[in-house]
Image (cartoon, rainbow, N blue to C red; front, top):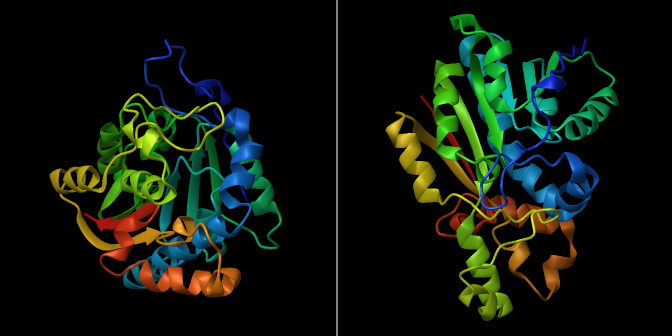
Length: 283
């Protein structure tokens, strides 16, 4: 049965700081906008299709090799669709986000499933999880998901130490993050040269879901190498869909778009054009 441990007192809002000081981002005040913008259409379907293909397949292989269900942690989970799906497959899942409103939406979705799910919910910054998860060997996780989190952290590199602490020795890490190269490429295609020439440009992050501090693929790869992780698969999410200003032919068939996105999501060089990148790495 779904269990609930909410730590609302541990900080749902961003830290109070001057405007030019970075802080971990919470989508608590724009949860409805996030749900509609990110998952309300084909873009969200593509995103979930690629992640589902990568993660569900690999987690099944891990579970078979271990001879038991996995213990899974989703950090900064948002709506937690993949984590909830993994719970329906019998895995034990811990779901975390800084936003109470986002997790309320995730819990509402989980409650629609006619099945007992082993899910524990924690509303708090990921840094506060150390106060509740424990520090023993059996408190670690076989798989940690971190999707669209790195680009919204004040100190993204620091989360690698958290992963090291809570991932089992043979565990896997699923990192999905915004690809800053896609921002430049899309604006080149759209002819937004003035925007690209404006070195002071910042998205209005009161509502915008375009991060102002994304991390490049090379930077993430350097963190993984420094922490002794090995990439086992990598994919691009939306490698062409967002770049097509004129919808023609197969673009008008959502199933065909998803099929082609899945095909090219793992092929060089197309996958590195993805609006988001997914890297699955193991210790």
